Image (cartoon, rainbow, N blue to C red):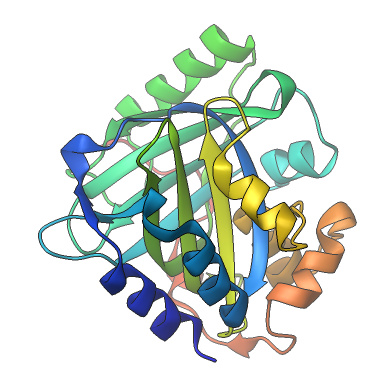
Length: 271
């Protein structure tokens, strides 16, 4: 069962909510799940009309591409693999179906929460860090984590996927549903299995209704990071706690050739 097709059907059958009516969740608790497309059909039926689907300019399913930045020795990957309390991920995210481009800095927060800081990045290339971007990252890391920005930071890999976002009408929670993930970097391309959906339940307190529904269906959360499993798959790094997810979620045989091989790995210059 093709997960893209299933999510398109789920999105088409749900009531719509416009972007301006969706509350931001820059500080939140995330729970992640990987489910077959058939389970997604059951979940949508269980949720009923409690959730609405995000609609922007008439679209309900959106294409994303992200470029992740790290040091040559992959310090941010290692921070996450070691489960460091003070850790971060840095990426540009481009909304290919509208929404522009943002530079996003995700910080590990207290008690497993995630704090996201971002700035508009429409006037800069997705694979480069401008002087203004480096200042933003450095200032935010010092202010929020008392952490010195590692150098040099350069592009390491990219991810592409489609997303449907379901918004809880009753409170500060939403569910993102990602399909068709493709990871590119280090001269390799690794896709996810096409029949699987990566769900991220995002709520202010970690007690979203969808988490209760999924538990009732026998679905349990998993430890997964798109960036970290992509590094492990593309660069043959130890996956540690992500090992079961990596082998379940990603295709086993990577192809050769990727646009990311043309990207410089040194710290890019400013605009």
